Amino acid sequence: MFSYSKLVRGLLFPIAAKLQKSAILKEYKYLKSTDWCSEEELMRIQNEKLQKLMTHCYQNVAYYTKVFDQLGLKPEDIKSREDLSKLPILTKQIIRDNYKDLISKDIDERKPAHQSSGGSTGVPLKFMTDKDKWGIKWSSTFRAWSWYGFLYGGKIFTYGGNSLVKSEKERRKITKKDIFDKLIMNTLKCDCSDMSEEALRKAYKEMMNYKPEVIRGYPAAIYNLAKFIESHNLPSPKIKMVLTTGEMLLPLHRRSIQQIFRAPVYDGYGAGDGGVIAHECYMHEGLHITEEQCIVEITDKDGRLVDDGSPGFVITTDLDNYVFPFIRYQVGDLATMKKEKCSCGRKSRMIDQIIGRTGKTLFNKEGQAFTSIVVDNMMFKNMDYHRVEHEKIYQKIDQFQVRQHKNGDISVLIKPLDSNEPIETFDYVVENFTKNFSGFKIEVKFVDEIPRMASGKEDYCISEYEHKG
Ligand SMILES: [Zn+2]
Figure (cartoon, rainbow, N blue to C red):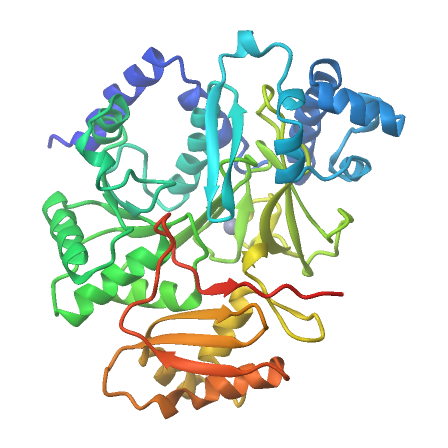
């Protein structure tokens, strides 16, 4: 039987990759071959790439020549992940201040791609990547998909914001990339920045007409679409799986998406700027780091490694970006590294949990930090937590947002599933927050709509409060 997916995989994709001089398929084949490598072998691959990158940085990147010289280091002093902590952390501010000095001298030979990231953290960050970083990043994603039995070329409905999809306005102008997305990536893209009833209906129709094998996108957006299907008693599409990316996947989202789409959810984590990329496997025990392409460290605020299992900043080193190297880059996320290896048998290290963006952490008067995942737990967990109560509460909240104001007071905005729900149902939320944030005023408010950011991402935790001292 003719299948367009097979045509893409067998013919169109290889031709397009060749025309674009992209190493994507070569890299994909390579990653498939290293998928079950021993830990020693993975570290050997990683260290080899790291040493090559260090030598390049010292010789060609003014910022790093200066850093190495000031510290009295030579490239050969950085042989492994452990040695990396001899080098300082790279922040967005340092990148802005040293933009020119971070560009490699051999830029002309590398024909770099100009990029910018951000939106969620305020001012966008300008940077560059080597020409085929696109292919390298996608090869890792393709490998993860293959773990779930989904091969590139398969039909995808993408529902996301500006890191995945063009806005509705931009969509009117068709570019080469749109044609590529449609024909070669076999993807229909739909913008999620409008979450009105009308926009959801339109997205639903587009999805149903398209008949995708897979839905991919921002978890909160897909969750909203799932809820729309449920509340209107509409048929769900027959899909194999849901692939989430671009923002944090909360337990609430995973649960509802799985239930309503009757398909498993696999989460992925990537940062366009840091080169970090990690994917869940079918065991759902954490996110496998693509060790062949990036080094991930979890550190305290001074760049010192924290123990596995303890929360800290995600620090990444991109092993494939030579034109604008990201060495020990602070992505802006908090996470924990898993102590154990995954029971699937793969030996890569795993990010246990992404626990929120640093800018969106709430603080109490004592300076204790509450990241989005913790806040999520306070929303859904009674302090006398037991399963039955949990289930009930899940059925009462449609969406929520927690805002900590400049003075530290907290507003919890809730869009209840049932508009007749008495606000007293959520007294436990006030209790949970009061216990943790004593001295600040806590209020729960019902709203019809949760405000979204311009990027289309949804924020659960917004904080204007700065803890001093
Ligand atoms: Zn695994």
